[in-house]
Image 1: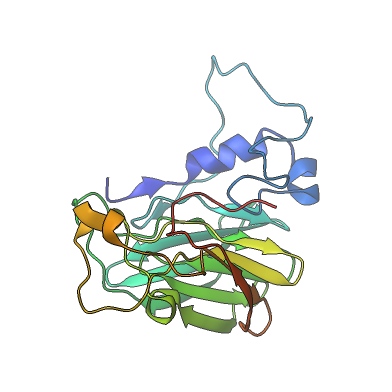
Image 2 (image 1 turned 135 degrees about the horizontal axis):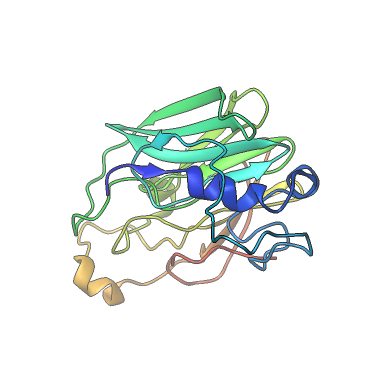
Length: 230
């Protein structure tokens, strides 16, 4: 499906109550506590008459849902030849800002050419990791780009079956990213022979949120699609 609707995401969160959105939100893939659970909050379970649609919009290609922090929804998708990070008001879907970045990627299996990973946000920053390994951090309020990095080029990442797809994790003053690079070589195996690759020591890389400087790297593993947790 080339275009997806955001309405289900918005309704699912709003039925939990505005207090939950204001207090905790859903700032990353697995929720505020990294357990994919909504805290003990009144939820409407009777859907026999349907749920009220607060709003819906068409979005571009991609696999990731939006995330919510401080009553803002951040969504990352693809329009044409660009990956787009957009900030909306939760209450009315009014666009606050957006950033566009050129991308060249075609899914080897023909499923979807958009980003796989969800954004992640806190009160100061929002980060997004594109399907080709393009990593960005922007000011969560203004949308001003703080820094960007081509992780695939810098760390020698060979695209997995469906491109780069691990959602980053903001932790205090760090951005934790599953990079999973391998040694540079002219002879890269095809998608069916990724087991021929060897890994370098950058399974997980921690970057300084404000500057983008690498703080440390750990683990000799190739990348997967799992979201890191603390």
